[in-house]
Length: 356
Image 1 (cartoon, rainbow, N blue to C red):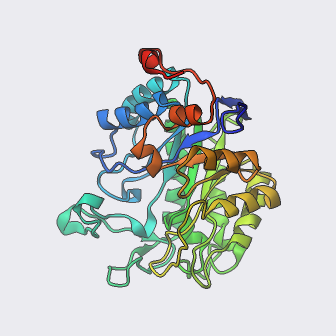
Image 2: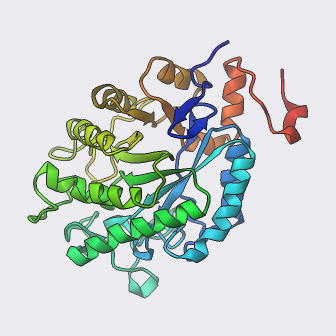
């Protein structure tokens, strides 16, 4: 049968062999920002598993921009070499290596999930997080440092430098992380941004840093390679960032040369009320695609082949990104193809196991 999920899509100079992408998923397994063999196997197995696009986990543009000590980083040239090795393998599997560049903002300096996800301070190898305003994520935490103008310029410069390194490392798509309550999202939302300068209050001011980061990234990223931005379409909280603002922002981002909006939601405040269920975030991707006229990626409790096929076939989004389901099944794309009756190439080393 024909399948929209397994049709190609051209974005700038890159042809993606299908509409399946692997979402950036933190592995908390780096040391001083360096990738290792875990990242090679984790990312590489999803490439050999048939997905078109493999997006590396939130990769910190500075040491203080890490969520945890185990986050990958691109704040120094020494980080590049291992990532080149990982990306060579991804490309060898006819997949596209992508990277999500990130700054954790006030949600930085916590222990790994299996160590309790606890806030760390200087007594246990933590550091002082920065944010738009001195307001912590959890009310019982020490307040982050509100960024001054010098600090904001450093953030912009760090994204620029990391982009330059990402290109050297062989990535073919870059995503700016402006979702899930991390630094750029913190500037977007009035629930975390209480500034009264040119970076606060009005919509135009709250999106200013994201636009400045975008411009810095574009100054290093080739115009013919895909550039995505991940946003939280809503904070799921009264008075927060909302879908109307997301549509307005997406229209601006399209005008400025962004190719695709990776549409997630939430993560900014602890009192969010999220109605979890299959496809619960897909309507946001659909609305942004239709009203902003930009390509979108859909995420959120998408676990089945027919479900993903319907999302793309009915024009709700252009890509479907998988996170937890791809952790459960590295060969998700190959298995989805079989379920949908689509014949796709398998790695030659595995062809003897392919069921016709």
